[in-house]
Image (cartoon, rainbow, N blue to C red; front, side, top):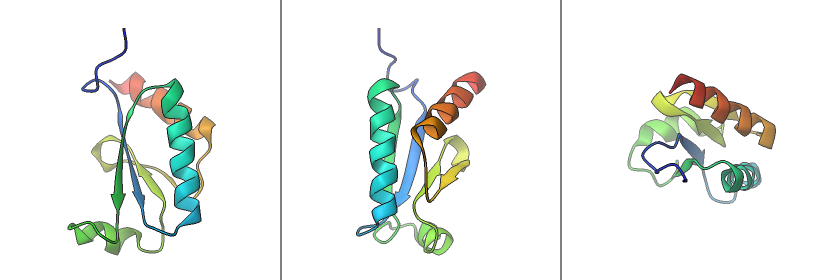
Length: 93
C-alpha cells in the first residue's frame, strides 16, 4: 500500500521563472519522486506574498528545504542527494 500523502516527507523548492538551475533541480526532484513518494511544494520567490523568501534567496535559487525549513541543498542537486535526504528524513520520523 502506498503511503498516504499525510505521511510523506515534504520538500519545498524555492525557485523563479527563467532559471535553468531551478528547472534542473525540479527535474531531479520529480525523477526521484516517481520512485520514492514525497510531497513537492514549489515557491516562486518573485511572486510569493511572503517577501522573506525573496530577500533570503534572491541570489541563491534554487534552494530545497525539508521539514522545519531545514535547508537541504542549493544550486545543484543530484538524485543521490535527494534519496539521501529522504532516507535521513524517514529515519527521523
